[in-house]
Amino acid sequence: MNNDFPLILAFVKDLNSSVRIESAAEKQGFEIKIFESADQIAPPDDHEPGHQVAEPVQGRNGIFLDKVTRWQPALIIFDLGNDSIPWIDWIGIISSGSATRGMPLLCYGSHVDSETLKLAKQAGADQVVARSKFFTELPELISKLARVIDIDQIEDACKEPLPHYAVKGLEKFNRREYFEAHDLLEIAWMEDKSPGRDLYRAILQVSVAYYQIMRGNYNGAAKMFLRVRKWIDPLPDNCRGINIEKLRNEVNEINQELVELGPERMDEIDLALMKPVEYKILN
Image: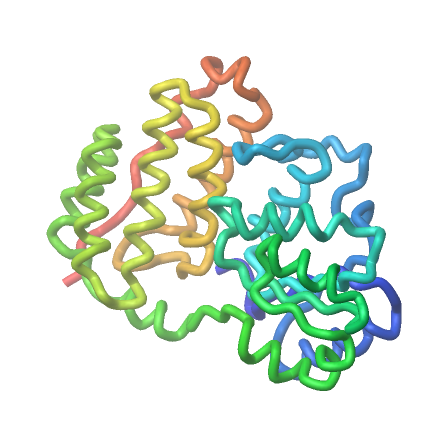
């Protein structure tokens, strides 16, 4: 599993605010990343992989989306008085992106600037409050809005054996019958009401990504690789007999190659990177 502590991202204008947010977050057991400007998270000359993604954003916005998707924060905070952050664009990207939709967004700003507060809400923020209320009620706001995954529940659910449709789906997956694997894993997901059901959602999305690669659909594959992080990253390294650590590493490797090749050279991708899922049947 990637992180021991859930993460809060904060885009804040001044040091005093940063210290107050950091203190409140850490007291509740959160890791905190604070940025005062867009350059800190997405420099204009940043050429790392991921500056172009499947969503309809590129350049700095693409870097931002890629990093937020990788981090999977429990809460994102925007200081609406921070002119060094394109917050209206980034709120819209997060609230509408297929891989980031549902990430809680908390914004604060001057109580006299009602138009700015309104714009943040229209862009997709979950809650927008005046600055005074934000700092007075910050612990309560974090508790109310932060999306925290119950790791203990997932680990307990991962001790259960694989059901029939999941096993059949994995068999199809390992024969590279990805379309059929998706359908069977979706049945397993729908029938399972436990916290372990997202195991099947993770693998079926990998299945769709591999299927899109076979079809030569760059955007479709890249979009699914973005989405899958939400479901595969919280899982233990082994879940219901499936070697998640191996699968996670393989997905990262082929996604990296896909991004580096880009849509124009997608046909050069090494299909041998699409390896079978390693699993064993638990008693």
